[in-house]
Image (cartoon, rainbow, N blue to C red):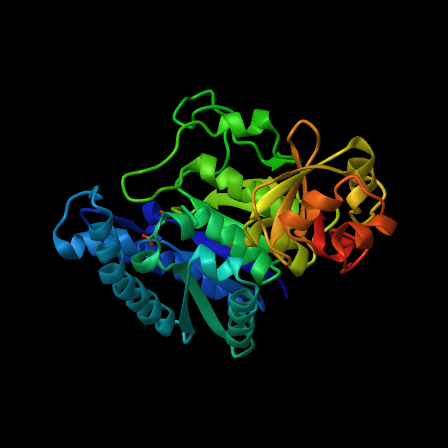
Length: 364
Ligand code: GLU
């Protein structure tokens, strides 16, 4: 049994003028259904709410007005769910809706709640369908696009693979419209050169494009989850993938998989500030697997409390780790550069020797 998170974008499922493409949806659902019958678990991240809503409102393209976009999402989400529910029903399968915002993921308790719900649904053989809760999401709490939501969902449910459906066969060596463009079947690592291949971004109804798919793929592979980008407009691709055959572009994950908690620290929670470290501390974190002590801290940036997540930067300002701080920014300013034995005399109290304990720290 494998657990797949499948991301289905707006431009596969819908267009602003025609609304939902029910024929395509049926073809995709038929494919997904056969994978489930083969014994696998599926979580779907589906866009298409805004596009479906625009059609119902009689609007031709995505409006500039955010409130109208959010209204369209609210109107379209029910159509989207109904289409999934109805079509999966024809294959004797049940679906459930879980709408998320970035804030839900950033909050540890809500993150765990969402995880528990998703696992319970899967245990009952119900297919969870997630989307961003667009009607209530403002910029600061938005994922931005569903590719990112899919990467987070993949780590949330500890997926064996993230599958992103695209309107092309995968990642190409150049613009896929060019005759000389070649499909890249295997990407061992998403380097800046690979990112460059992704070119422009966005479509009329979605916000993604190949670039955002690559960013999501980077996040998931960094977490230790393999990613495949396949053509969502061709039938049978998902079934071939589940059979273990090569389709689309495969992105190799890093060797060491992050635990769900460390994945959440790295990508779920947002940081409240940063600290600069000297070379010794950077080395201790990256190569020696140590906790962070106050002696290696050179500078504090921003204001944060005990229990906030902060970024650890090297002396050039490059992020090297993220973790939960046992001291506030104010306290850290007083103990930075000091030995652990000096913490108590500097502050008048001591919570712990470590500023960030190893268990609460992720090297990035
Ligand atoms: N959540 C949006 C929708 O359902 C789309 C976001 C995206 O394009 O990725 O329409």
